[in-house]
Amino acid sequence: MLMLSAAHPPADVRIVLKEGAALAEAGLAVEHLSPEAPGMPAQAAGVRLLGFPRPRGRWGRIRHIWRLSRLARARGARVIHAHEPDSWLAGWLARPARLVIDVHEHYPSRLDDRLPRWARPLGRASLRLFCRLMGRLADAVVVAKDGLAEDYGRDCVAVRNYAGDPGTAPRRHAPGPVTLLHLGAISRARGWPQLLAALSLGPADARLAVAGRFTDGTQAEFEAEAARRGLSGRITLHGWLPQAEMAALAGRCDINLVLFQPGHENHRLALPHKLSDGMLAGLPVIAPDFATEVATMVRQAECGLLVDVADPFAIADAVRRLTVPSLRARLGSQGRAAALGRFGWRAQAEALRNLYAGLSAGRDLPQHAALLGKPPPRGL
Image (cartoon, rainbow, N blue to C red):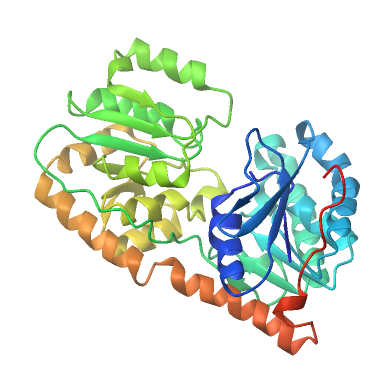
């Protein structure tokens, strides 16, 4: 079977290291076709990685849909599992025996920031119509979090973005200066202005580690603002790290940060990897009180503090509260236990495998051994 991506990286955490690995463990031959990256390996977690030149810009992606469909068809896979709206369409055009679409985000609201306020209802209605159409064309719809299924007009399979156990020891919390951790993509909408302001307002010896890329081209602005506030010596930018290195870094930090800012529907419905990653590392989290699924997890696991993340004073106050080692240890331990249990990846992997077993048995698909692609064509 073929995992198909128009934009995700070759060894994407959800697509390859979680879903692809779970299906490979069940006996399927899994490939991931995605934009190529420098130094990309031939395989990851039992998934074969195949690349194509990344198209430039949003319109480039749209123009690339037909070519992406031809590349997918050339694989000869009986099942295509597609991960973005343009790859959903490319997957359908490739005419596989079965098409599974994977919904990571609330797509009807994706154009809100690019449209004037008066045009947003029309934009949402148009994208919702596309989502419903793709829901009817697909053989199955997988959703990454609550609140996404209603736009597809059918029953969906929930495979939530929980994390698997990285096998590393949790943080041992001790007295002394704390290190804050920001994992994953970082941008203004993900709260770096509020984070820098809070760092300047909080404990003077607190440090910040950032493991991820700036997704809105604002790294120079971030560094200039950090310098203006006298924070440069307290911040380490690690860039994007492989999963194992990220887990090791988390184990050296003290407080996990999820600072999605209000005003975005995807932020309200967010269920980011970074939350589960921090819980597995034994770190308490500071998270947004408006984000419904994040807040539910934090409350049920009793693993952190929910605050108004648009207010730097509220973030700084939460950091001060978490300078107490015993509190960090208690919240971190509760979070880790929840991430290894009720909020763990194992049950989600089983739900995905059950979906594929149902597609095979219930819809007259060949058995697992036959859901295979053929060798890659020359030049792919």
